[in-house]
Length: 407
Ligand code: GLN
Image 1: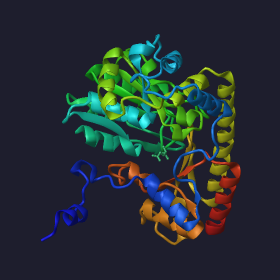
Image 2 (image 1 turned 90 degrees about the vertical axis):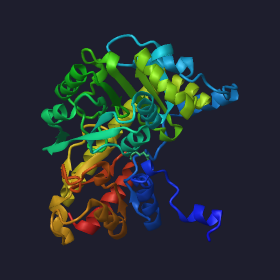
Image 3 (image 1 turned 45 degrees about the vertical axis):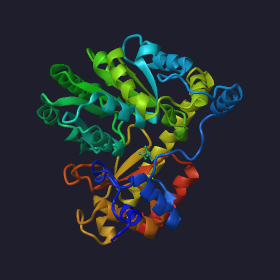
Image 4 (image 1 turned 180 degrees about the vertical axis):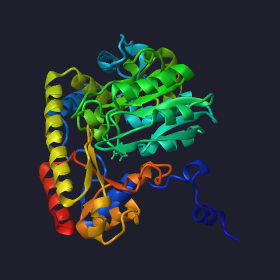
């Protein structure tokens, strides 16, 4: 008979609600890239740190003894900066409408756990960021999906598909714009459709806007700024993408006092509060013209990276989709099928990614993992390449892909 220790070790210990998810694709691809010495254009993180002013402010905060628990809503000076920059179309009260979280990922988790009852439905746009679905599973909610389909150079959705999905059980719609992985920035018209559905059916909009300051074409409009939306939106964002400090894990929510109370009811038991010295540094960053000038320069650098990578991938034969914002470019793989000696559609993007790591020495992300049903919306037909890297890293990846595929 197995003793206790053996049975604990031989059985999958994960709770049933988390078994469908496995390890995140980011850890898996980064591990494979390391093992094969591949250039890693997979996980989206910058390979250069953000501005020195943030590090100096953080070091100062550590030395000045800002090292005990912050208030659970956040350090007041930081909450004030967040409130000042919020785009709800009205003033925001930092004390009752802002909550500082451990990155945007916790912002979304606390929102879902704080607002959603088991059995409620939450609408996601697929492809979706991978944590959303796991969050809903942890909250006991049911995910419903609207598929973003490629229409030339961007991805969009069918308003009727969204309308048909939303009913009496729909508690929230999670809207990620600018969108990861497609790089689409939802237009005012697209957002108006979502706003109308939310208003008509009394649905909360949860807006993941972490790429709000990395827009290259067009303009980012916050769904919360549309008529009637300020009171029914939770706007989630973070410091990491804007200031190239993804490891700081400083995010936040902005929402009405009632929604904020619900978010905080979960946040207080998840993490209670977030790293105090980093919040002081974040307050300094948001209030610093020098830091914002740095962001502006980074955006221009990334625009150049996007253009260079897109042009190179097109030259190699990929059917590149124009990224309007963010860190990533989606490259359609149909046209390279022949070069690889496979039938278009005859592969899974996950297999193609592994082959690219092994044969070309370049890693990227297979977007099918961001779909509930990858066969709907051509989920296997693209690869996601990160361009938030130094130019010489991108150039090396391009050289390797050319060697592999020609072009
Ligand atoms: N947001 C990043 C991406 O999409 C990765 C975040 C993570 O590693 N969890 O690549």
